[in-house]
Length: 457
Image (cartoon, rainbow, N blue to C red; front, side, top):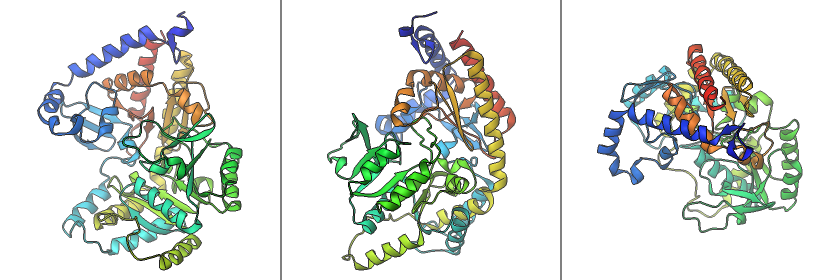
């Protein structure tokens, strides 16, 4: 048995390094067309990628995709890959759902953008209320924008300066959420590019599942809004403890702060998101990513009484730029895709298939972990599954940061890809779509077992 200092997540470091080097070589050797294409064409991009997070994939160089359909991706070297990343939720309902592809073709003949509503926009508004509840809606292009605009409204309505977020949270690239706890105090996260403003002037941080820390922050009288996911994601996956969300709602009401629920990832929870499934009562509701079937779209909605308060504020403010809205948001293509997704793709039948498949995946991964005696655990929220290379469950962002094992996860990701399975590059997230087959799930579990058999030999 190797000494404890030579273990990481229960794995011998020497063995992990050996497997990592082999899997990296295997990936590179198997993709000559990809390597050649990147060498010929990537030089025009900063750091050789169109978006910097494309470097976050652990393989030696990014795949170059030829096409995607259903829950499969094919790269330019001809490899067909079972896709459990699904655009990190953007394609949660599968790649190019047929009703959405049809809507895109139809709208493309009618124009792409003209800064005015369409009949599809009016129908989309009705469908949004039917699906997510009684809110007054606005359309953005990304969930980052939607969260940013929601926080402006919260500050306008309450007259307070700060947002309260949870340690380890992720709400897109919203500046206000880029804070963390350090020795119990809020600080700007280190590593932010070009950051010159002290974000503690506009944000405070608490621990998820810790209502006492939330109340302490609210007692300052400075908090305009609590911005939270129902389940913390992008920091491993942290489930709310019983009574936590009810406590958040009560504290927000008592201290005159708005409760903003960001469902951009937890839309996987079921029809209407975690809010509908668990009966949450936010003042502002945000969802993006897959809400329009993969077309860049996000929505944010205000409860009617909050909408009235905001319209009253808006009527009295000085004329000029509000700091909200972008030219291409709420374009007719978004509405065509939004209508198609809400009416024909995001259905109870689709979620039933996703839930069943995700349970199959979760059960299979747990069985493999138990078989090999790995000190790991598995978490599932609806169609979203994650294996975490540490004991669990995790309670907050501090515990999640300690559970994150990048060197182990990188090996697993590349090894799974070499066996035909793609999972999200950020932690170990997997999604089951309405088009994911049982055999794809079983292939992933089998590949996972093969890798752990070697790592824990």
